[in-house]
Every structure is written in structure tokens, then in C-alpha cells.
Image 1 (cartoon, rainbow, N blue to C red):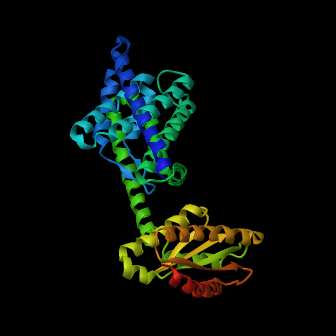
Image 2 (cartoon, rainbow, N blue to C red):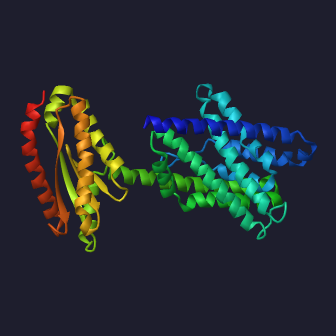
Image 3 (cartoon, rainbow, N blue to C red):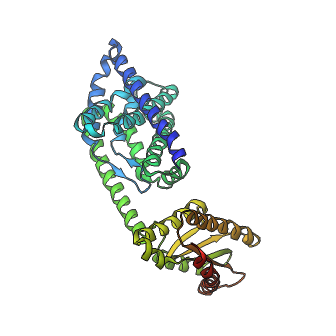
Length: 391
């Protein structure tokens, strides 16, 4: 994972440098006499962004979302491309001054916003039929510019979260895409209304937009909290996989399924109590986390991984009826890798696994689980002698 994180860190530095370049370009452009009429717009938007910038929602994926972004994207429709980067600049400078110890994060934050603004604004200006924002003529160009801004912004947010959470970028991008909702889309669409209201009513139009943004922000916060509560209720706190409550819900769902097939795996850590007694409970907890992490990393997104209780895990993987053998081989390779890793570390533990195919071997899930459990204990009995022989 370290080898993957290093290139991502370099990309973060590159985005920060692009942000510095955008700030320098915007400052130089602002010194030109032709930029003078845009000074009130820059100052107003920058002040509004500064006021709302402390508000931030940490979404379930780990990526951050700020309602103030709608005020920044409003600049795409009111300012020339080069001047857009000046809107978030005062906020970043103030943040660096107030939090000197954490200043390294802010150049990237500014680069993320500035590059997305520059590209989105460039697309809008290339497609817009007129310099001033008016509906409906501006709508196609505005939507195209916002789409570019959104994709770039969310990509950089996923990049930052992947480095911070030590995840693969592809996995993080899927998490960010999965949490897209109408609240986020409305925030972006609000920037179109903000540009039109500012054009018609000046700063007072922007004040109305800020009030509306506050309401959307509260809705997003509530959604995020609800998602976290639901996630916590169905997730094992130690390993991060689904818990027994989630398993019961899964059983209820599968009772209504009749057209699917798959294989259920029952797994148990051999010698787990002895590991706890010899190495301490921290080592035992780490072994459980190792199993969960390896299973989540190697299984498909559609596979389900549950901590069934104590040192037991259940995995269900759906597949075509003729794919049962290949699925078993794939899962057993993962188990073999885990056992080999423990053996190299001189940890006297291994995983016993039993499996059963549904519906070929059992049509009801309780019977399927009982069959997999019986086979797992048969494997466990064979392992006892092997573990005793280990030095």
C-alpha cells in the first residue's frame, strides 16, 4: 500500500503547485486596468466565501464537502477565467495565518478549488453565448462548466481522502461516487441562481443565496449523521465488516430470493484463546482485523463479509451455478495467504473454513449455515495436530 500512496502524495503536491500558479496568474490579471470593474464582484464573493468556509461536512467516504463551494462556483459565471482563483484566496491566507502548524493542507485545498474553478470556468466561457448570465441561454454552458468543476473537485477530494485514509484511489472514487445525492447537486445548481441574483440585485441577492445554502447544509449534515448511525448499527466496531445485526437483515433478504445462487463460507480462528493468553488481547484483536481487512480487500464489492461472533466470520459470495468451484478456490487462496502470513510471523494460529453451496446443498439459509459450520469444525479438528507441532 505504501508504494501506491507515494505517487498519490506527489499528485497532491502537484495540485498544490497548480494552486500557487493559479493564484499568481489571478493576481497578475487583477493588476490589469481591464480587471477594475470586476473588483466589487471579487470582494463580495470572497467575503461570502470567507463567512461560510468554516462549515464543512465530512461525508461517509471520508471526503469533505463545503456548502461555500456554491459561492465559489458562482464566480465562474461572473468573472473572467483568471480572476476566479482570487475568490477563495483570502480564506486560504487567513487559514494559514491562524493555523500555522497545519498550513501544509491549505495549499492543496486551494489548489483543488482553483484548478476546478479554472477548468469549469474555461468550459463555460468557451460555450456561453453571452458574457452576462441570463436564462435560458446560459444554461447549457453553465451545466457543462459545473459538470467539469464537479468532476475535478470530487476527484481531488477522493485523492486527498485516499491518502489520508490509506486507501486505494479506485476504491475511494467508488465511495465518493456512491454518496452522490441531490443535496450536492442542488448546491452546484445554486451557483447559477446566485450569479443571476447577484446580476439583478447585487450583494443582497447573494445574501439570499447564503440563507438557502445554510438550509441545504443542514440537510446534508442530517443525512450524513443518519448514514453514520445506520452504518454504526450494522458494522462491527473492531473489524469494520458487517456485524450480527447486518447478518440477520441479510437472512431476511435472502429468504425472499429464489433466483440467485452462491456459496457461504464459515471461518473460525484456530488457537485464538491461546494467542490471547500468550501474546495478549491486542494481538488477538489485530488478528481479527487482519482477517477482515484481507477479506474486504480481496472479495468483490457484491460479496458480503460478516463478523458472526467472537473469532468467527461468515462470507457469502453470489455466483452462477457453474462457478462454485472457481469461487471456492479464490476464497481458499485468500485464506492460505492469511495463514502463510501468520506462519512467517511465528503466530500459532490459522483459519478453519467450511463452505456450503446454495441452493444446491441447502435451500434454506439456516440449513446452509449449519452445513458450512459442520464442515468448518471438521477442518478445525484436522488443524489441531498441525498447530501443536508448530514451534
